[in-house]
Amino acid sequence: MTEVFSYTACRQLSQMIFAIIFFHSSEYMLAVGIHGKSNVTLKSLLISKNYLLAMMLCFLEYFVEIVLCPGLKEYWWVSQTGLAMVVVGETVRKLAIVTAGRSFTHLIKIYHEDHHKLITYGVYRFIRHPGYSGFLVWAVGTQIMLCNPISTIGFAVVVWQFFAERIPYEEYFLRQFFGREYEEYANRVPSGVPFVK
Image (cartoon, rainbow, N blue to C red; front, side, top):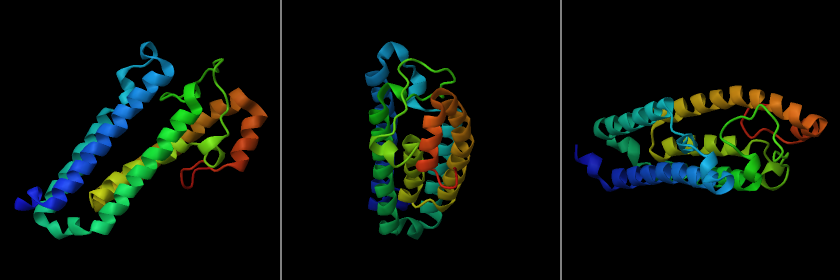
């Protein structure tokens, strides 16, 4: 049981807690900064029941594994790779938000608004959905950082599936809003989520 209080556990858990707090608080603060406090709700924290369940399961896996097979958590290079993924994913997502400005929202818009613009510069020059690809890298990275093999696979599958369904739905409306311009952009630039055209 002392493994729970080891240096490795304290480092990994503190990095995870910091990553979660930074991700959600910065999402909310950016939404308020871009859209104004009166246009933002607590939904911009991006915390849902499914998300809370996933986080509880990942912490459960972590504590069970650190007690039953503590050596599994000692692969520092695996944990550091996960930390690097968290930083890269967070950076890509926040670049997406800042670059798109008012065109970036947490909800898919089904009606075109005057301030909507097709953003094709900055990080969007390389990835059509950098917010989604950044979150995918961040989410999987958190589990690699914790050396959680089961949750790594689970997070990768669930987050990928979510975006594999969301991207075509969102792009239907983007094609309606921007027509041929979006079609050409989509043919030229990858989605940023593996195996999602």
